[in-house]
Image (cartoon, rainbow over all chains, first blue to last red; front, top):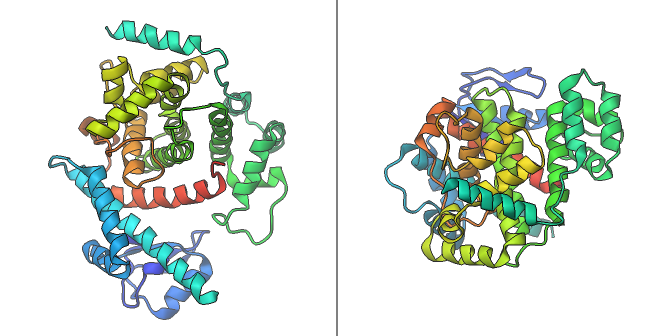
Length: 122
Length: 288
């Protein structure tokens, strides 16, 4: 299981924990497979993220990398590589590196989306 | 040796004529909240005495993070919504912001990045504290916010030495505290905690600043709160929340990790949540 932001949800994903609104009311119980309608109603309720079963984070990283322009993805990899270099075999630091990379790639992808949206509006 | 350095650090702190002072509003608020069941109107009265704090509270409650449809204009209403813990954090952060603005650091010190790093560490340390069920996440937020204040003292009052340290960090890739020890004989954790003592902050917060690298720590000093600030510093550097001038992410100390009693799988939640809270905070508290 793993928390995914509302923007990353895909039809067919399965809830590992109930999705709740800000008052704690359950909107959709765990074990349910997401439909387009579910995802839209989460948005209506202002739910920001939900816990999804069997998330393959490496795959998500790969997908994020593909949506970004090559130079952006490369510069993020390079900067993080410098920040984290060198650390000897340390499971905690390795995990921090992996998560940080995913979050930063995601932020960059969101920003790129934002820019495209702006352009389309203009 | 250590004692000599400690005396030198004290001398530096004492020689600074117009040392920025921490606004009294935070101390007064903490005092009131500790000694009595303060009413919202009492708290509101204290806050409204400092316009910058009152403005920040209203900005926070009206930010997208809370998502209210109607604008909230009453301080008392805002306090009731945000809750006392959030109010304490905001009051401290705003006071700290005003203090930081009073410094005139070297050109090689990036105030904006430093401020973001301070907020980033405060937020990450608090999320760690909450996830590990510590009883005082607000104190940890404070420790995180102030952990690197010593760097600002060096950059403002020991400019030449500070510039040399920055050059050394650039060249060698050392942690800044290692370069400071090599070149100055003491580090920013010592100067920062000396300032915090002068500000009469509680011992536990002084210790979070003093030992956030876990160096020179007397036996049995390590607490979960110190560990949260130590790891928060690593997480916010890894997530590139501003910069304290380090070239490398500080390594998480094994003992510090153990004492917090978290699982490696908790890191996912902690880092996602920290990144989110950081964005919310930084957007309303941008350094200008």
